[in-house]
Length: 230
Length: 248
Image 1 (cartoon, rainbow over the protein chains, first blue to last red):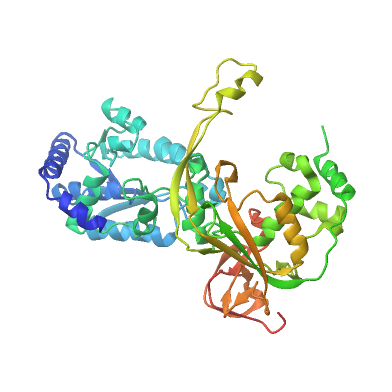
Image 2 (image 1 turned 90 degrees about the horizontal axis):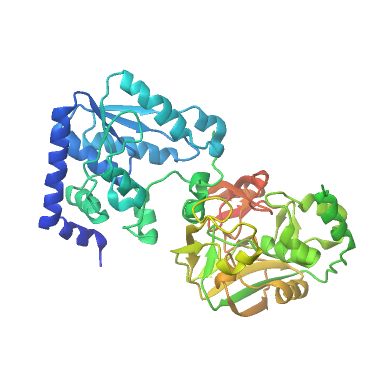
């Protein structure tokens, strides 16, 4: 059975429509309260949905994308992220990165914490940004569920999670039903890992070794294992 | 502080030599009883034999070999008579990567956790499963439910057979939890050497300098230990069409 057909059928259910309407309402309320929000766009499936939901109501909003560098994300995939965002309608895309990714290669550990959360987000706060739309979902894990339930932002800028209650089926149904562009890597990983479990993360990242991600990357992304710049 | 290199060199020197016989091209087929667990799309046969020779050389000391440290150059110096019984061209061994039949990739989740039955050996009364040395892991693991795994080799078939019979507990990773159990091994001599190229297709990573033409290349390790980044070169990828230069 074609999973895409099943998920498009799911997109016709009342349950799914209610979740979309609730997400739109969350976005609407947030846009009324906050004057200068932005979208945290990783390029993955969840942030793709959030991007589409927010752009419907605020087409000029700033879309912030963090580039993990060529050793963690292949350049063709990085290009896909940006192309997809533009295709969905993002006009104001801001791409940020850290020179540490180039300098340290795959030894770049916790750069996101230090550079993104520790430096970039405070800088954005200084620039006047007062809220971030983030594609966090409760279903992803207990830590995330608790974070959402306790309304705990991990940075100095408050976060809004429009799709917090969505399941993996809602996410894919939203994407397939609207024919939204999504990274092609999902078509490669999902049939093997499962459409319910597939996640976009940095490849060959030692931080995810404990989850066995490098085992999967070693087989599915073997050409990228020994990536060399230039 | 023990000098690790000297310790292992001394063992290697004391180990009896591996007596090579005739080298011949052959095909080795592993008929599998359980799926093969992998961390790359293929298994390199020369690394497999290298692993068995290390067990043969070091015995129980094999299990205390330093991790992520390439001992090979030191052992070669210590005992040149314990090298792989496989034909070598330049630095490339004439042994193919694994061919899985059928070749379909699956993923499962394995759980690694401290087992209470060992707790008597510990000083502390509480074991933290959330972090530290005894952390419990839920890890994704890739496996291939192949019926047969085929390698092509050019080497000493009898010696390789002996090493496999003596030391090989299973094929691939995580054999301790049941993956890679072998039902039967079939050795067949072949008329031609298919270990590098078969029907115009690369059978292993081959450095591009050895090829006149090739359709696809990537940075891959072409000799053991395959985890060592110093052994990575631009290579023709296994499965790509290629033509070796005349000298090879």
